[in-house]
Amino acid sequence: MVTRGEKVVCLGEKMLRFYNTLTRQIENFAPQRDEVRIYTCGPTVYDYAHIGNLRTYVFEDILIRLLKYKGYKIKRVMNITDVGHLTSNEDIGEDKIIVGAKREKKTPWEIAEYYTKAFKDDIKELNILEPDVWAKATEHIKEMIELIRILEKKGFTYRTSEGIYFDISKLSRYGRLSRLKLEGQIPGIRVKVSREKRNPSDFALWKFASPSHIMQWDSPWGRGFPGWHIECSAISRKYLGDVFDIHCGGVDHIPVHHTNEIAQLEGATGKVPARFWMHGEFLLVEGGRMGKSEGNAWTLRDIKKRGFKPLALRYFYLTAHYRAKLNFTWKALESFQRTLEKLWGEVSTYGEPEAVDSSYKEKFLQEMEEDLNTPRALAVVWKLVRDSQLRDGQKRTLLLDFDKVLGLGLEKIGGEEIPQEIRNLLEERNKAREAKDFFKADTLREEIKKRGWRVEDTPEGVRVKKIYKDIEE
Image (tube, rainbow, N blue to C red; front, side, top):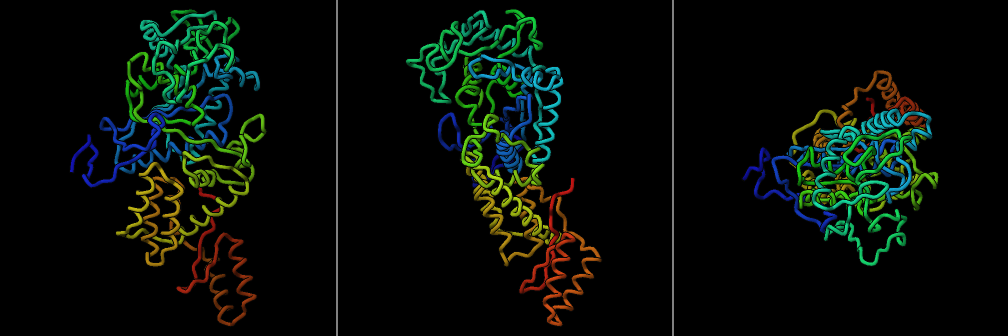
């Protein structure tokens, strides 16, 4: 046995293995310090997060929960983009926060505050653990300016009439995360770019602002506002150091945002900022692209308006591997909500936890430790539920343990005390069955169901389960 910081590791313990986008392979994972340092790209707070965004945050939550389950200390940072994210990846268009402000006739500051709170409400309802550090872009302008000055001194920047740009030709390994081939790119041909850019993929570090632009700050180069990519580099470096363990986000961040984050910090420090880069795949809707232009960028509010529970959406996400595309349909969500309610109902009958020595824990961890294979982990859960060799209290012990990783709210479900009115109906039903009055017995079963309880006749006797239409806060 050896110690890694405060984490005790048995020599025979199976290693965690995660897919690293940087190397395009699954690798053994161990932190470089006595804690796992993680940066997760947060929301741009100009509107509600859609269910594609939320899928990424649930994948990251599963990662965090597994690491905590394995005994690691965690330091996780998430940024809040409340300035600087333009409506185009090519550094053109308006700041999304200002677009939101015009849409709702509010100030940018009001928009950012409102949608920051909305995002935090969403992740709470999805049972997503909060990061250790929330970092607003507007509160880290100083750190961004300092990082740009380092890049300027090292010769990575140039000035145009629009702002200060990063010259990607000065970084020989630019684009390694996305496998971007720069040869043959001619300004204005492949992407819409400023005529003053030296290379099509050069990106803004600092944008000059017109007097009418509301969100702007003083800088060594003039009044303006930061580029989108610089905030994550400055924030991660401040809280996690030059090199940290894991950087997460959606696959849409690979070709531009994360590629440019690496460029900025590699230019400034000579190091790739994160050892592992982990990305969640796209969520499709009815087999096609999700987007506002398609009218299907559903939010958690839309999910709830249609009578679905946030944790049903979480369960739905877990039915596919985080690196696989997942197709959202309302019918599928309805099916998985019933599945989750069935699981809640099972747990409600199990009573007090009992000690158990079982191979199920090993099987569950085997799936989760191999790149977060949640579909196969759920299969282990349902095999456990159907196992007649385990006592109910033992099942409860194991399921509550697994739910520390899955986060499906099982800890909120106790062994429910059956109300006296339900007990009276059950006794009346039993008498009807003994008298072979099966019509009356079936009628009483339906009455019990209407009152929130499900009756199951099993070889071992009658079982009564609470029907969970939701989990109480």
